[in-house]
Length: 422
Length: 119
Image 1 (cartoon, rainbow over the protein chains, first blue to last red):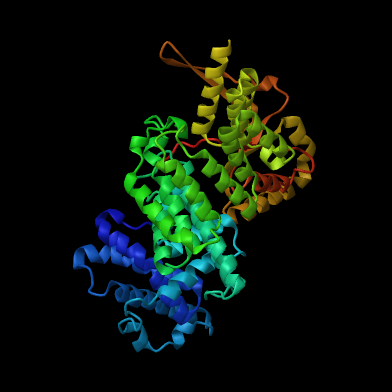
Image 2 (image 1 turned 45 degrees about the horizontal axis):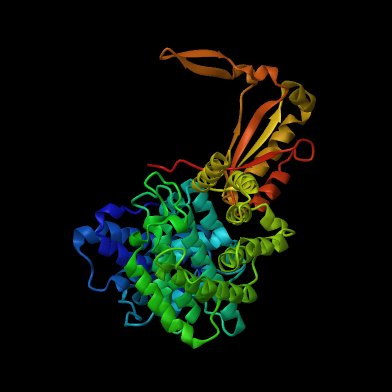
């Protein structure tokens, strides 16, 4: 189902997507049946997109959507019942007046826990990462299946399968769409942040030709991050993730050339970095860090902030970046983090020291077949003056790259260096 | 991440497997296709015509010049291909190993590097 987005002005479209999780959350809390409520909410959004431009926006858009979605749910439940005499449709037992009346919970500030519960449910560990992403974008982000499919360059039918399967999993496994408590809250919050970060990265890495009508995935992740930060203002890691996304997205314009080729950090025109995003990210981080015990997102945001405040590579505070990577590595050990630490070590203590860090990593098969391992080593080898080994590593990296701009960049590096060394 | 799975063969090989078990083999393959369509990971499955049907097309002096493919010289040629979209290389390998004939013939798995986006 695709919504005729063009007929709706930007503000109304934004409002619909803002209200989508609140409407769905309220429905699920009242009636259960996440899968049916999700369909009904999408239909209500479609109805709004068709009717509001003609009839004008209702005085209480949220109540309007809840009423329309509830009616759809009721219609569907009646239809199901007459067809199969199903007795388990809660909606049927709901007094009609309650469905048609104005939303009982339309007051300000309500819907917070519903929306949060929805997001936490979409990121339940019973769902695979692609399912969590697809479901979050649809149920919480209010995107249509067609928009999500276009953003991931898969056929709409494929994305529809993925979403309906995820909904079936939620239904079959009886995942409660309520906020988890205690240690489970912290675990699930980590899954939620990871899902948002994956959405952001998908949009950031595959930057080639997004459809104009499709909200870019990075922008969507930032929107959801801002929304989550409003719901959980005291959560320092939520602020950290939002800051990280803003501080990274700030470099977008400088990151690719008009032909789509990649510009590495050291060659980026820093005047093209978005200072407003940098300021927003930095102030979020400045407010979050003093709360102590910074988590991995705050640390990564802090690293991004150090880069963003430097005029160029040489004046970057590399000792501080190295210290942050050391903290990050202790907190959340990950070969990619070690790779980044090797770069920082190379800057602070010289390329030989950086290569020493990589040598310790080599037995990790997962990493040693990854293009970034070879690209990093090639860079350090080049700085250390071993051009022929660097050329070989640039070529090895190019062969393993998983995106075309990256492969072309690495192949060009190999070519450049081979031409110099003859 | 998208992946291409390829299986190769030739008429001799098909002849050796065909016959009575053919419907059964097709059913197994269709069951595989259905299974992974439902998970949202199989984007398409395509079987190719025999290699005698393959043509080589060139443009010479602005006009198309068509010749039979050189593929007849090769022992095995592409028999079918499958387009996957899944979470990781490990998952693609797992799906390939689930192909009905993977216990007899290898399945090639190629990561897809680039896809021309829709306009």
